[in-house]
Length: 365
Image (cartoon, rainbow, N blue to C red):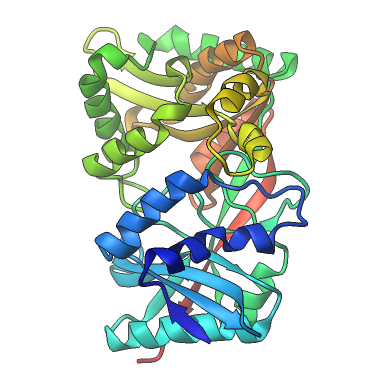
């Protein structure tokens, strides 16, 4: 049985379902439930931007999914994006969930589904994990049981594109490679690498937006974020930000912004211990013990791509990571059809450790 989420009571069931589904999985990291309730209350119940549904089996929740309609740069049309897909290992449950979504989309003239992918937040929680089930997810990445991909393929979904996550730990070897890249870059370029400045945040946000617009114009799969997206992401991530790990590269002579890197400490290490509760004292204590960071975004304008700028920027960032006791680093998730940043991280020791798959399905209207 499918039930559409129309009330706070249903929404809370939708959100907390994962506590039952993943109660025996030691790797799963619960989100901060209070924050998620505020986010989804707005998206599902107030703005009606997303539709959320629950699948019941034997009078118990057995699956969930949330979906929306948005423009696709690659498809050149409006498509249905789905997210928050979780379920028991049951083909019947998955079929029932997606039959509801598909019928809804056919009624709206939409002939393509794709996910998991949040178009309003394109660099987080995207893709179904299909490889790399042996470690906990880092902050703002997804995690799921290994049967999810098989179930989707059973009901007609196929690979649309993979995204990959690389590690590039802060070691003597990686720092040496970064130093070599940085020296090579500095021979031919006069660029400084500034930390995020909270006292001039409007200017920094404008520069980040400029970089994203220029750096994503060649990427087919996703549009550059709008200014609203940039500001929304900044608000969502404010709690997790260390300004010394967010860097904007600018030409010294012109002050022109040419590169942007966003790195966050892996607060999932903290949330794993708070089990989804916002316990401020516990968070303040545990955040000092974080040993890993995630490279959320790394964008270079076309003029400076393949010049070594990304390595130059990460040399500065790795020095900051070492100062605060962080020696593990994961970079991603990166689209497989955008090899430039992937190859850049491989040059200083990065290896692909996780693969996330975005699944698509054509509908017959």
